[in-house]
Image (cartoon, rainbow, N blue to C red; front, side, top):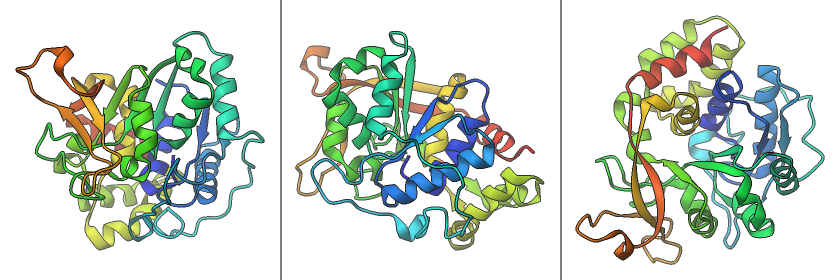
Amino acid sequence: MDGGIDDALALVLGLRSPEIEVIGITSVSGNVPVRQATVNALRVVELVGRPEVWVAKGAARPLARDPIRAYEFHGRDGLGDSHLPMPQQDPFSKTALKAMNETLSSAKRREVTIICTGPLTNLASLLTHFPESKNRIEEIIVMGGAYGITQYGVGNETPVAEFNIYSDPEAAKLVFGAKVPLKTVGLDVTTIPQLELERSDYARIRKEKGKFAAFAARTLKKNMRLHGRFTLHDPMAVASAIWPALYEFSSYRVCVESRGEYTTGMTIADRRSWLSEDKLSGDPVMVCSHVGARFKRLFLERVTAA
């Protein structure tokens, strides 16, 4: 996770969902610097009361380029400039790379699912330094990309590129080509208007009692005041592991562009249906094409319940 508001809400959702077991969290440079992303992850772990879940500090910069930030949207603290208290819990003593490798090494074959809600730098480093680790990954779920398979599949950082992929396209290219089962939940579905939080949803959050609703209300306040809407990118990716029946995925061959003058960070789904599979470009990816309308209701119930 890279420390933004939707990352935090996704962590609350994951940590409060008995359908999945969260083992650990890694931070990465993205919306905010990695140090701030680590602090924000620790804040959520303490909020939910899950001290056994380790938070390991990850990569401080992309593989081959300068980092970009999203302060204007997420605030200087990554949580809507909500100025929350500093966490008491310390980060894990090991780096994200070591923590991920050791966790996978002690797991059974194809047992662990990795959900990525930020740039893919940490995972790319793992697959580069410890290539054998991919044999223990059941699947990778990525919040990232814009594939043009719905009318909403256009970029948010550039006309064609989504923020997480654009932040480190070299890492994304490596992960997408790693021959590990990969699902992506991209802008094609996360930006569907009916699935975004609206003012009425925010009013409901503010009326709920308890520390989780208060946390959500506080972190969302600035964005809701300015924009009146909030897109649940990262919670939607996490929820695909919690409520898979709400999701539909379509198989595509996908290329990640890392050198284009105007297309860096673009995720290109080869939609040439008249070609045979061996003629298509890219690596096989399951791209989310539909999310049920119940997602938002279930998300709000899980995240705000006392």
